[in-house]
Length: 113
Image 1: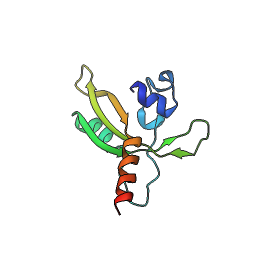
Image 2: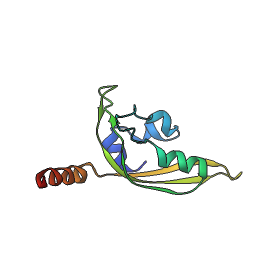
Image 3: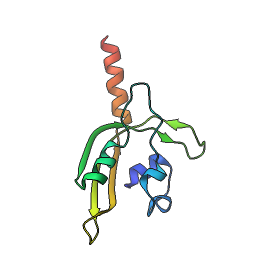
């Protein structure tokens, strides 16, 4: 995980390294629009190919308040790393939070109505 994702998620590197990302950051409960979650991670894990996700909403659970999620928007890249046997062993995940940018676009769209 990159530093930005660690900072926004409130989770130190020690809590993330060596753990399955799906255990640390489980899929969010489905939202009313059926917004897909973790698609790039799942694709990279199953296909073994690099995946880029241009925009994904993934709400981050507040570590101080279990069960409470804060809305976040992300642009991310996932690179699978293979072991000697050719199987995917690790997913390198880099995410940039773009929530403030999306909020600005939403505000501009609202003003234009």
